[in-house]
Length: 239
Length: 239
DNA sequence: CATAGACAGATCGTATGACAATCATTTTGA
DNA sequence: TCAAAATGATTGTCATACGATCTGTCTATG
Image 1 (cartoon, rainbow over the protein chains, first blue to last red):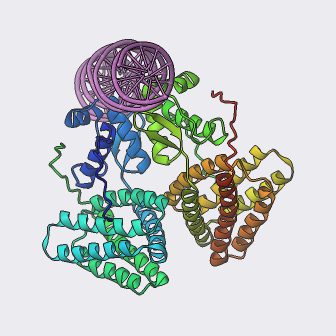
Image 2 (image 1 turned 30 degrees about the vertical axis):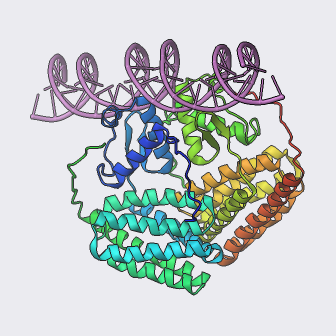
Image 3 (image 1 turned 180 degrees about the vertical axis):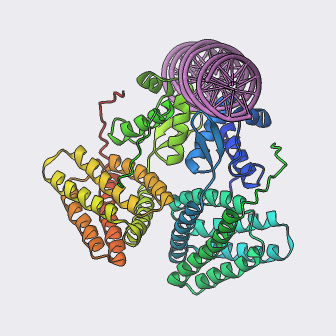
């Protein structure tokens, strides 16, 4: 955000492995693979045009992140979470984002606050017009701004992990219908509390936001449990 | 803990990869490799007698866990954390264990409470007699009991990750001298609060415990920063 | 007809060997 | 003395191989 951006020639510090990991993460996040889908190594190798060696390293990482599950001698599948696990995820996420909100108020620089407000402004705009995919992007930018201002890199790591799992849940519940507009208001509460410099209120607003998302997810998941209407998605091209 | 234990034949579901990961984790935890030490693939392959393929998968996982850092084209090293990062780690750990404590009070079964108290009893005994390595073990058992009773598997995952990082810190600060006896009292506070069924007090006690560990670590780290007395460890045999 | 067992195909787990790219160090040359 | 080139070590990635294990099918038998 400062003027001293990096001029440096960005020699591709991205190893191919990182690209593969990101590619898979993105593919799963976009619903190209649904939770429970098998990820057959040979197929993925062909799709991504990388060696099995590399692909397996990538899958190993994603397993630690909780995005895929590797079943011994059966192979990797996109992680599937039970309703109970979903609850656990949201519960933890609430705690972490609450902490992020509190830390933000206590430590964020003026620049970081401005960045957050900018992200929020963009978000409210996007929520009226753009596609649902774009909404996810701006929302992610909002979160990035929030966690960056919390000045705790380990918290950032953990939130990334949790959000990966939430992505899976979002895929299982097939997005929330009327959810997004409500969400904007909740995020507004966060921003307002931050502007008031009220750490406790910010934390509370962060928690509430997560909780309301959790409530919707739980509702959909429990509906699905009683009425197992399996929807198969067709598209599945990578690259 | 219930009578309905699993009778099932536990065919070695442990893939060799898991063994390698654990082996490396343990080796680092025991100080066989110090933070910053290079982990040369070929050497590790020989020590562990596994293929490079497998070793690299294991290192990939450990990188996600934050136990090793892989520097592009230089190779993996045991993770090194700055004082700031150490602070971040403890801060997060405090939040997570606070949550674990609260959840334990709210949800633990009678059996889980008994297990925790048993672990605590064993711990107080060990703190008087056994070796420092044994102390770590019983302490770990205590924590396992605590997190298990919290009934949040994702929280358990995250605590595992954090504790991995704490292990690294413990290795950098070379254990805390008078620390352990103080620690027993703090854990006692946790147990007492749990017995009173006081969630808030438990959470508070958990946080305090982490905080006092953090204080000592910070002290040692800052000392080390001013007086960079690098201590090299010799032993380094695996298997 | 039902069921157990045998067989075959698919896929994973792991190992080996190879080679270019890159980093670190030493040697060479000015 | 110092820059430049050569050397060696190590990583990043790939192709290939093969036994172990799972899954589904087919056959034979009761």
